[in-house]
Image (tube, rainbow, N blue to C red; front, side, top):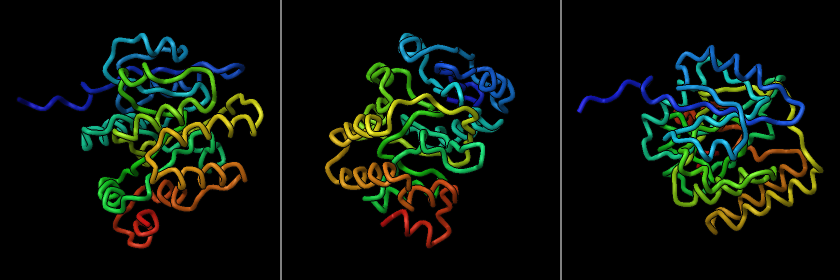
Length: 241
């Protein structure tokens, strides 16, 4: 059977509405994608869960993807058919990693990490909101409302499934998300600890502690900024330890 062209694999794009944040910049960016999504919906997570579509590209209203963002996600998905969640690298307008969208990478299986890096992706323990290509069927188990929902939901999903960061897929958070207090937000995210594999809990706890202090563990930043270049021996070694 002939393999379908990549353009036929395009998902439905869904922009999640947020208070006081316009979805217009994201809508315009979707019209400029080198690989266009099947269509664009602006709504909330409840709307997404009712969609009849195999795959969904889930975007925050304040996140504007680069023109090649979807094409990079689809290329990674074609290369890694086992992946059920693929995340873009989301930056701030200053070019720094966006803490709101910062994923949690897998570090305890060097072979898995290096295998992923050879494909220019980074394996994940959990993912946050921002720009996620996901199977629609998995969204039925995603919670609504709380800011820690994406982390808990994805941690449960990726305990038994493959999720990856695709550094070549880039988006910029042009508008700040609306949040409640940092302490409450951290408390919600700590709920993800119970969802991950036991060997990953210490690393996730360290990640949350670094986040609470306004810092990020170096392996995350290095893997994301370097684009998963496995041929750089030092970078790959740092991630794999």
